[in-house]
Every structure is written in C-alpha cells, then in structure tokens.
Amino acid sequence: MMNKTNGLASWKSYVITSLFIVVLTLFLKTFFAFLGLVNIALLYLFPVLLSAVRWGRGPSFFAAAIGVISFDFLFVPPVFSLTVADLRYVISFLVFLSVAALTASLASRLRNQFHQAQQREAGTAALYALSRKITAISDVDVLLNQIVQHVSDTLGAKVAIILQSSIGEQQVEAYSRDGLEWANEESHLSIAAWVYKHHARAGRGTQSLRESSDLHVPLETDGQVHGVMAVDVGDHGMSEMPELIRIIEALSDLVAVAISRVKLANEAKVAQLTAESEKLRTALLDSLSHELRTPLATIIGSVTGLLESEAVFSPEDRRELLLTIREGSTRMNRLVGNLLGMVRIESGMLRLNKQWCGMEDIVGVALAQLKDSLQHRKVSIRLAAELPSVPLDEVLIEQVLINVISNAIKYSPEGSEIVIEAEQQGAMLELVIRDKGTGIASSDLARVFEKFYRGQLTKHIPGTGLGLAICKSIVEAHNGYITATLNGEQGTAIHICLPLHFAEREEDGDDSRSEDFDH
Image 1 (cartoon, rainbow, N blue to C red):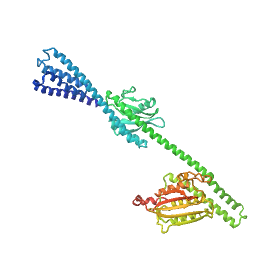
Image 2: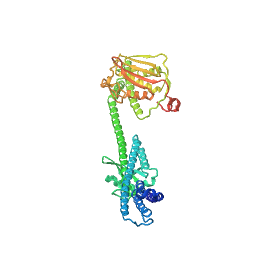
Image 3: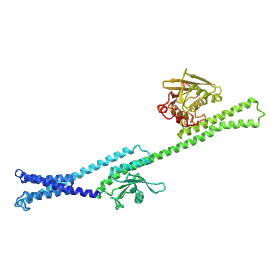
Image 4: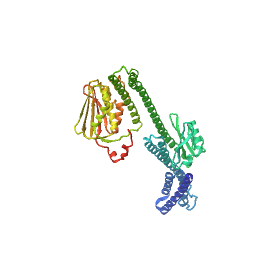
C-alpha cells in the first residue's frame, strides 16, 4: 500500500512539474521582447529549484531537461527547431544543466535534512509523550497496554509485546487495538525466542530473518532481556527502514527501562513484605516466649496448687490464687487481642461501627476491665463538664484506652497516680492519659507508635510494641490523631483527639457500612 502511494505521488510530481514549465513558457513567450534570452534561461531555473525542494532530485532533473529543450525549441534561433545557429548556445546549455544539477542537488540535500530533522523531532516527541504516560504506572499489565497503543499510534503500525513466562515459554502479553490476529501468529513466538537467545533484533531491515515483514526488537537493560517488541513494518519501503529502526529502538529502550522499573518495584515490594513477615514472625515468637509464658506459668502454678493442695489453702488463699489466675488470663487475652487486632488492621479488615457515645461511659468500662491490674495505683478522672457525645466505635475506642492505660500501669511504679482528662478543643475532643512512670526518651516520642518499636528507656520491660501501633491505627480510622509527650519532669502523656462530628462522606453515604461488622 505504501509503495503504491509513493508511486502515485512520484507521477503526480512529474505532471505538476510539466504543467509548471508549460505555464512558465507561455509567460516567457508573451514577454519575450522585454526579457531577452539570458533572463529567460535564468527563469527556467525556478522549476528546477522548486521541484528539488518539493519532490527531490528526479523531478528536478526532469525540470532541467524539459527547460533546456523548451528554451532551445521556442527561443533559440532557429525557433521551433532543436538545432542551433550559433554553437555558443551549446555551451550555454551545458552551463544551464550544470547549474541546474548543482542547484537540484543542494536543494534536494536540504530537503532531506529537513525531513530527517522532522523525523527526529517526531521521534523525540514520541519518546517524551511515552515517558510521561508511563512514569506513574506501577501495574505491569496496564503499563504494557499503554505502551503498545502509544507506539502503534506513533508509528501507524501494529505492535505487540512478547514476554517470557516462568517456564521459559514466549507469550504475547499485549497488542494494539487492531492487532489481535496478527499478534497471535506463531511466527512471532519463534522469532521472539531467537531474539531472547541472541540479544539482537530480527526481521525486516536487519541482518537476521530479513524476509519477514515484521521487526522484532529486544527490550533490554544491562544485558537482561525483559521482553520483545514486535512491529508490523511491511508497508514501509527498505529506504525508510534505517530511520524507522532508529525510532523503534529508541522507543524500545524506554519501554525496557519502564518494564525494568516496574519489575524492580514489585521485587522491592515482595522483599519488604517478606521482611515484614519475618519481623512479625520474630515478634510473635518473642511474645510467646516472654509475654505468654509468664502469665501461663502463673496460671498453671495456681491451678496446680488448687488441685493438688486444696486442703492446705484457706478461703482467702484460694481467692488470691483465683484472682492471680484471672489476672494472668486477662493479660494473655489482651496480648492475643493485640496480635489479632494488628493482623486485622494490616489485612484491611478493620471496619468501624460508629455510634454517638459518651466519653464518661467508655472510660468507666475501660477502668472496670483493668480494675485488678491497677495494684493500688490512684486513678484521677478529670472530665470537663457537659462533654458532648462523640461519633465513634465504642468497642475499638475501649481497646485504645485499655492499651494506653495498661502501658501507664506497666511503666509506672505501684502507688503512683494516673490522670485521665478530657475536654473539647474546637471541633475535636481531646482525651489525655498521664502517668508518673519511666517516661519516653525525647528521641523516641515520634516512633513509639511504630509496630514492634520499643523505647530505649523501657526495653528491659517485657512487651511486643504493638499496643500503641494498634491505638494509632484505630484513632486514625476515626479521622483523629494520637501523640505522645513528656508529662512534665516525670512520666508520659498520651493525647487522643477525636472529631466531634461524622465526616461528610459518612453522613451522606450508606449506613450499612457501620452495621455489617461483628466485634
């Protein structure tokens, strides 16, 4: 199709050149008396120059030959004859042809350079547009589909990308809109396998498999072939192939870098997930060995004593052992709850069941659950008068308070004071839990809410480092925030801020979201 179009354009250029010379000749014949033979000879150079700039050397040489014949036949004596009365005109004809040939060559060269500059500009624009389009894409399938369609639109040809599967087989992963049947031809897979093996392009315009109507280019970076890009170039002439191959190779280099980037990002993500899984496994084992074994040993010892020495213990002793068993069980239940809560948060299963709740009730429920753990610590509750109700998930916020107050108990001495304060701060309700314990180093204040992080001052005290991380996730799910500060000269203050109103999307949205989750 391209060759037929080129042939039609070529014949059209000769016809237009001939018509131009005919019109020019009529004009010169009309004004012959005013122009003279020298000026007429010079004016016949115009068709030569215009043909060279517009169509190249062939039409320009044709214009020079027709111009000389017209000049000799119509203007040089004897008129209407190709013979000349004065042989000096032969020299004029030769000079005219020489000047015409030189002018045609220079104009044609200028035209070719201009055409090459346009092609390079188009190639650069295509590369820039493709790079902008694929920069932010992180999904391989989306990336490949964007690439093949962009390259197809740029080159005006069918395009497909072939990747190697995990078992070494070639598979067509993406193709342009009109290239389904073409992309599924078996020849693509065999040629792609050869390109993979030899790290070299193959097909039309190359040294290998040149009889093919397609061009296969490796998508290679740092000696590694990530895939093969196949382009249907059968409509392009061999004279166009060098420049076309240059553009395709530039595009393929950019595509290879993009595929490599996405692969590296996915590998980094997998490595990060693996590291996080290993960290979680280590933390779980550490929790089992330190956090669970202590209360479990206490429970087993107390139960064994009750079973084997029942007659020895007085009612007060048995009650104390039962309280010890309950405290150990509560501690184990809290630890397991934290571990399961973090798993639920990390897996995206956390759902809120927001209801209007009073903060006094939530604080009361949390303290009731921790009654046996307080161990003579004084708890001062300082809630501002007429606190407004807060839209929150009561069970989850109770878990937040239990975790924070448990930390205050764990890291403060027996007999010390724990203060719980609450007041309205604009559109937020601020809840503060203060203790007089070990405290947190200034350098650790920003990191205590990270998973598995243990402060420098409290590493000697058993723990998993999950409690505050869970609190942070739950509070942020409520569109609030939680921070840690120093409590004056001694201890820690945990600030929990919760919004006093539902978010707009929750007010306008479907209420079923808050009713389908069973705590």
